[in-house]
Amino acid sequence: MFNIRTFNAIAARGLERFDTAQYAVSADSAEPHGIMLRSHKLAPEEIPASVQAVARAGAGVNNIPLDHCTERGIVVFNTPGANANSVKELVLTALLLASRDVFGGIQFVNTLAGSTDEAALNKTVEAEKKRFKGRELAGRALGVVGLGAIGSMVARAALDLGMEVLGYDPAISVDAAWRLPSEVQRMENLPALFSRADYVTLHVPLLPETEGMINAESLSVFRPGSVLLNFAREPIVDSAALKSALESGHVGKYVADFPVPGLIGHPNVLLTPHLGASTAEAEENCAVMAANQLVNFLETGSIANSVNFPTVNLEASSGHRLAIVNRNVPGMLGKMTTLLAQQDINVVDMLNKSRDGIAYNLIDLGAEPDSTLLEAIRSVQDVISVRVIGGA
Image (cartoon, rainbow, N blue to C red; front, top):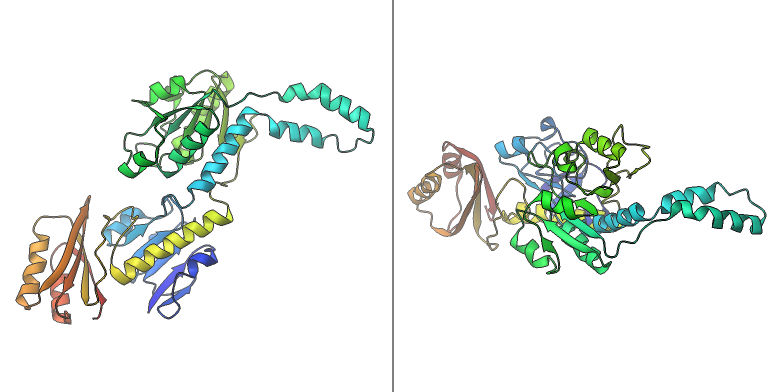
């Protein structure tokens, strides 16, 4: 029986992925094998020694103590792409709201709620509508920074709207490259993109190298009057530098999903309260994906969509499997197989992969490992954890 502890409200469709015959899911499990959460800020002291994996139903993991988990051999999962369509649709909404003053028009009409004379109302509307004149997106240039699951979907939708699309992503994956429409113009660097784009939309993760990426220097090469959209992470944009660019008129509008002091209420800023993944469909997709990853890991040891461990997929075995986490130093695999050979245990199949300072091993055995062998492996220097999966 596996115990799963949940933080936040997890969509029912996701929780249904846990077979009640094998899993006990609750918000107060004292010794969980896995943790499932959304936006809860997880503290190290909230992670008991029993925890083997943490799954976030969402893309970002800045609410999880990643280094702490890695040091303890805890796999951290996210759900890239599960909420991509939800975010894409909000970005399209932002593009339209930044181009047509629909919001201002609605506010104006609401001030006329007490009107009773239809002819006078129509005359007022016709006289005032010029205040809310906008521009069309067709023919304008959209710069997409980050061409992953969301960025590539935004790029495709913008092309369908008749926009010219410029893309930049120095770390684009093979899968993402296949998803990207051929009409997207690949830019060699960010200044080249910024200087040509009428609209810039950000779709990069929050990393040390992306924090403050949009700053006074980068904003200086934006096209005058251009629009910046941020539906990635708030710290990617330097708010003080952006406010200066807005007040000078160099940046025409800013639309983002992250309210910050100093920008709320600015006439050229539209801010939404973290609505990117706030659709029933996105919450369900993320929950199902996170749950499936936890189930697969706990039952087979295989890893997909981890942010701190390598991707490892070894076909499920009906026998005895060891899942071993160790620091990524030379000679570790040899030490483990030597201990197995000393116990006359045959290795049926195995997979060893590493990521940065961590290594992960799945080893299928021809016989059941006893407690003496397991303790011997655990005692090897730089071994972090040993888990038996399957028949043992």
